[in-house]
Amino acid sequence: MKTNREEILQSALQLFMSMNYERVSLQMIARSVGLTKTGIFNYYPTKLDLFVAVVDTYIFHAQNPQNKYDTSNGTVADFLEKYVQGVQRTMAEIVRLGNLKQEDMPGKSANAGYFHLFQQVLFYYPDGKQKLHQWLENEYDFWRETVREGIRHGELREEIDPEESVALFRQVFVGLAFEMSFYNGLDVELLRRRFRYIYDLLKR
Image: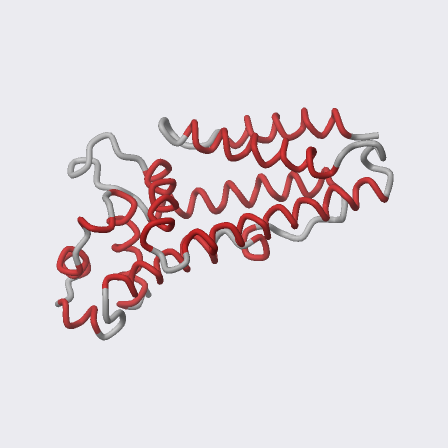
């Protein structure tokens, strides 16, 4: 059973994904969960406190590699498969939690709304730019170590550049995710095929 805190976070996620920070009010969130503003204040004293909690839960925690991906068997090939599966799980959960009411917001999608939430972090989350940069760097470190291990163990060709190789994988993923967010969301099978193509170019 969901607690009031969980209901508040989920309702706030839906609102912040569908409209900008300035337009969202605590009154709107209170109505959506059947609480008074005072009831929300018991959990989050200000709208900024609530926004930070939403971002921490649904971006920084959800996108943390340790929470997002299962441990691989040590090969790059298995890592790529676990990565795709983790993307699929996380995306499905965000779509479920961010289920936008189409009658209220025609044309909006949870996928595009999630990218919108990322943009708002830059403007409204305290030190948001630095926090996003740190998250991205951690993600790149995760990939770098995987590619370097693949080179060390002879799975990947020793002459490849780990930095450029990581960029190929990451930018294909981010580019596809952004482009397809305007439609029905990321096609995971297409992502898997693109990853496999890059892998085949790099493997020994």
